[in-house]
Length: 151
Image (cartoon, rainbow, N blue to C red; front, top):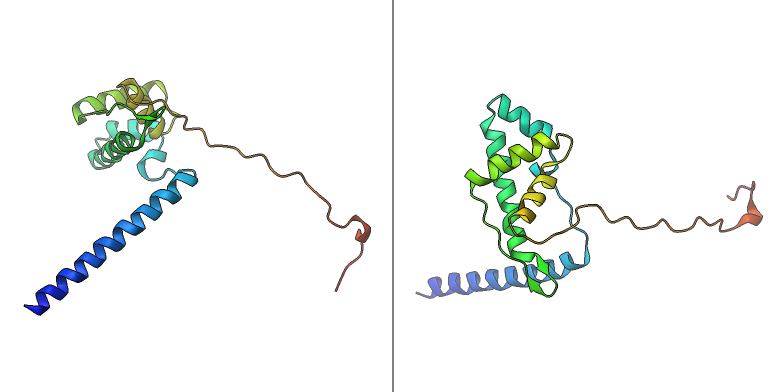
């Protein structure tokens, strides 16, 4: 019996550690810009090509990514101080909408299409454009040493 209790306390410690790390990750995520990867960065031309060549595996992975993106929206998106409306996009709805978006916008990334679809289904509006921070002004720290080499 003591061995079982030891495993239980170890499991509780692991859960507590996961919660602490999760909270720290959430706090960190609030202060950093999000980076998008995976299928979302693929272009609509690839989505269309997968359809034409019947590459259902890549299309399925892209749809899974899209549904994960929508789930993230449902958890984190806000309209002012309130949570945004949840969006439900069944595969039977999502695939034709993404097909139509990509046909009109072949040079766009899948994330742009999924974001537009999410918004059209009642989700929050958000800007996918990367935030550009101005570069600091160039300075010449020691102009008096111009042309001199220090050893």
